[in-house]
Length: 141
Image 1: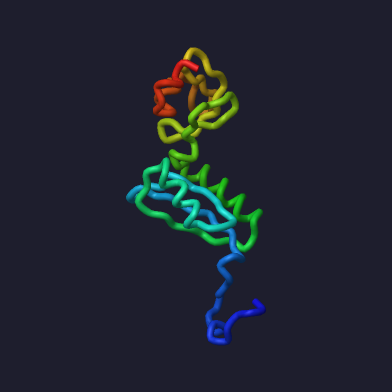
Image 2: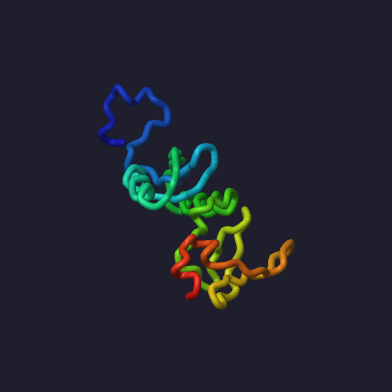
């Protein structure tokens, strides 16, 4: 770091704010409800999310590399399965959805119902689009 003030050189691990990439966790009380990444301002992303997500806290991890940050975000989403990461307004065939504390792939959409793909431990099943999206006006699309 070229312009690091002499007084700060004693701090091990010090870095410039803009030299990191962030994976952030939006939490509602003690539950992770969304995981995202940003290469810019965490604050701006949190403000955007506050318009359409309910959460009480935000935590983050910093990474020095964009690729590692992206891989870690995906890994953590599939590990913790936060509900907002899988809530879709208009589910599409092939898209992943979150339901019953698990992630399922959409196989088909028929008369307002999502038909899931089979998994090793679960047969395919149907669920209403309204139940997934919370939006009754799009349930029949």
